[in-house]
Structure formats: structure tokens, C-alpha cells
Amino acid sequence: TKPMALPVEDIAAEMGLNIQYVEVNNDNFGQLFFTENGDEISRGTLWLNERYIKERPETTKNFTIAHECIHWDRHRKYMDLNRIMNQDVSPSIECPASSKGWHQLQKTFRDMEWQANNLAARILMPEKTTRQKLEELFSNRRNLFPNERKGLIMAATIRELADFYQVSLMTAKYRAIQLGFEQAAGVFNNVEGQIAKPIWFKDGALSKYQTFVVDRPIAEKEMAETKSWIS
Image (tube, rainbow, N blue to C red; front, top):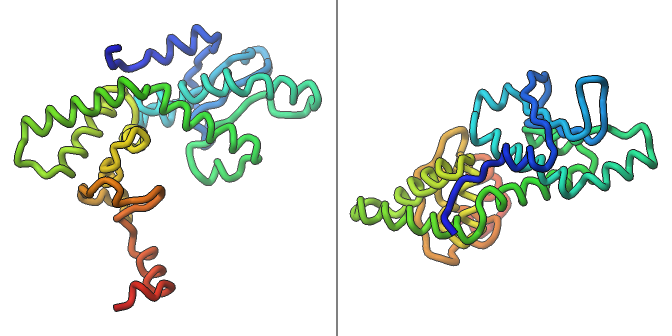
């Protein structure tokens, strides 16, 4: 199978979703309606927040559409049953753009968001073809620049991978880590508002949720609380 970027808008249309680009004054990437809400909103209407689409065009749009497709496929029955039992429930699922908005959701909806986020990356970047493309891009880069540091090669590979699949750098990075490319954890790390230099390390050097990069407040906290930091 040849690697390719998925036509997510076509897939959404085939699933019966009606995509609308709207200017909304909230902190949501998207909002999916499971029932009619006035004359202009029908069941299956998907609002995409134009404000975020303009800031990060293709990457935000594609991930949000895939994310909402998962809500429609996996969570539609829950929303329908919930509405039958309680007429006062929200007619839609709102998908926050910030962690603050995510934490304000009820637990059930946080779980839905977690599932949709995780599956969206897997749908946009399927395991077999993404691994194939990663290996191809990394190998090509090493052949073109044999003296370049491996960390820089990995950073360039992740950037090319993100461009190819039309996803964000962070989506491409974490998908690569999921697929066993551990060294992707050493690139595009934000420390105190700046991207740290790429780091290369041996396989197995990092456990899950570990990093070589920390900001000053965390480092100072660890040094104060952990005796092993003190020489």
C-alpha cells in the first residue's frame, strides 16, 4: 500500500457530516451536533472554528475533521440515548483547543476527547504506511547529508512527515514515538517558550513519559526535593 494523506473531508461527507466553517467566539477547534438545533443546524452538522483554521490551516483542519468523524462513529449512540433519557443535555460535543477547556469538561466527555484524539492520529497516519514513510524519509536524509547530526536528521524527518500527511509537528512526532521511533522524543521540545536543540539517544534510554528536557522551574523543584540531584 502506498503512503498517502487521507482525504478527510471526503470521508466526513461520506459519513453524512455537513462541514461548516464558522466564526465562533469560544475556545473550541470544532463542535459536532447530534440533533437539530434551530433552523440552520441539522443532525450531523460539524462546525470548524475559522479562527483556528486560519492560524494553522491544513494541520488543524485535517486533525479536527478526523477527530469529529470518530465522535460521530463511536459516540453517536451514547449521545442519542443520553438525549432520550434527559432532554436537557447538550445537542453537541465541543472539542476544546486548550488543556484548560479540556479539564472543564465532564469526565465522560474528557474520555471521549481522549479517545478521539488518539484514534485521529492513527487514522491520519496508519501504522504500516507511516512506518514505511518514516524509514524512507530518514534514510534519504542520511544519504543526502551523511555528516549531519542524527538529531537534526530526525527533526527534518518529522517535519517532512508532518508535511506529507498534512498534520501538525506534534502529531507527527508522537505518532513516530508510538511506532517505535524513540528518538523522535528528542526533537521539537518546547522549553520556556523556545524549541530546544534536537537530541539523539540510544534505544531504551527513556521510559514512557520520560524526557531529557525540562524547564528551569521543574529542574529547581527536582533539585530541592530529590537528594540524588545533590552532589
